[in-house]
View 1: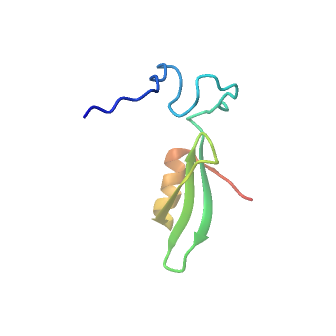
View 2: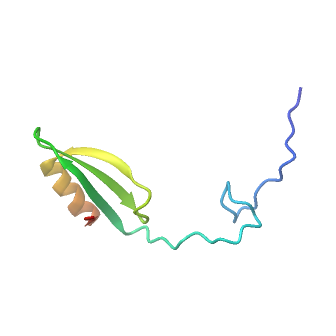
Length: 83
């Protein structure tokens, strides 16, 4: 049994999941901008933090020893966010 979809494939220049008739544009992003937001400096020496590239709203949670965190921030030229 063949399953066929009534949906047309999205054009190559349209991001998947966004209707081709959508009027809202995605915000500009600078992929060279890196951000960290420290969540906690733990008693065991680990730093819990969020790391994001371009948009601060989209982040991954990471955990590194303090020295590795400092090196990670330096290598990525990360801006430390405070709020």
